Length: 233
Image (cartoon, rainbow, N blue to C red):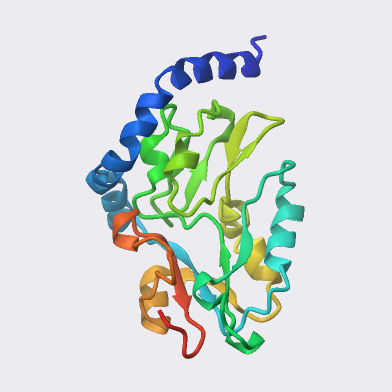
């Protein structure tokens, strides 16, 4: 039986031969590559819906339960992070604790995902019925193209397996009618999910806070952010 790690090493070696050239051209070429990848988003709109996250900064207390529940439930590899809670950079100089704001971030399951665009082994697929971006980790050769392409730094490289992994939106739980672990365990309701069209009607269309990337330029992330009151968006 062939060792998948040997195959992974061979493919990775051949891919890394051209990595220097790829990285040199990635910054300039990626936006056009993402914007030209219309088939994936078009298929999603025709055949299904786009599920996304809603994050309310007014409700988040920084308890990290969303992170811990994801880590326990998905048994993250050492040094791998699928979700993180960080301070909103625009409030780092706030003098009062009540004026500080947090962000809970993971893969945003973009309409036009950069990871899928650049992956040379087609390890990423986007489900038509709900827009969830799923990575088939057994296909990953560890070239890290997707890692560099993701504008939200939502992917992690595991040294022990030599592969990249990310949030899969607990799609198996959702298929059974259950909520993703991060949402299910959030004690304040700061993190929720829903169809993007509904979330936008309910909470507005803000997808960019502080120094987060421009949504239109990075593939339309499936996340809506409710900013902290009096937040300088």
